[in-house]
Length: 244
Image (tube, rainbow, N blue to C red; front, side, top):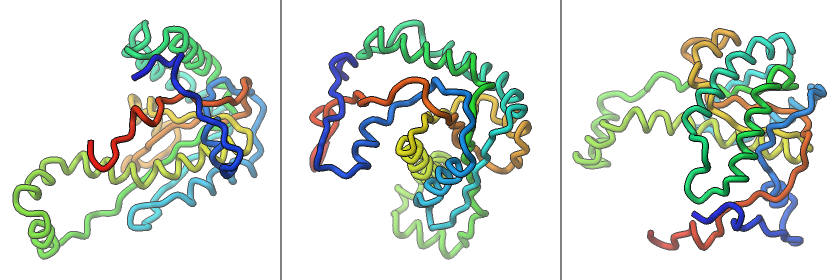
């Protein structure tokens, strides 16, 4: 990984569709204005999320949208505990390959959001729940035949990971749609999963059913900073053509 101070900024491409500029300037924005976000804009964000793909087209997602300041104030202590637990595990210095100044700016932004969370205009919690399995004995035998005994055994041993990734694949494309829509509408947002450290308490505070899984906590508002080009590793470092 290159030093973040030398990472390539997303190049400007005047011939690319507008979506490319949106992606190239979609920074994680954690400093938010307390100004309320109109309900119609939040509806547009959720609509963008719903347009995302869902495994088997089951569409079993649900979105909790929090805008009530009293509810946000109730969530703020939970957010603070999660953020402090996260920061306690990240270390005081930048990881290898990351510029110390850039790391310090990121931590400062996280701490700002922690300290001002009660003023967050909107928070979206994407949820998903798979239906009960419909696989019968005949289907199970056919699956083992298709995979082969060794691969079927490996699959059985990694079923928990497979199920988690399967659910995530039904949720996160919609989340990315939401983030892109927010950037396109001039709103700041960032995806976090820190709430999972206290998921039961978050679900209790928001009345989310026990058997429903939550996949992110996304603060949304008007940015106090400016959007700008993201800095990412060059393609030459990350692409493996035809094989690794």
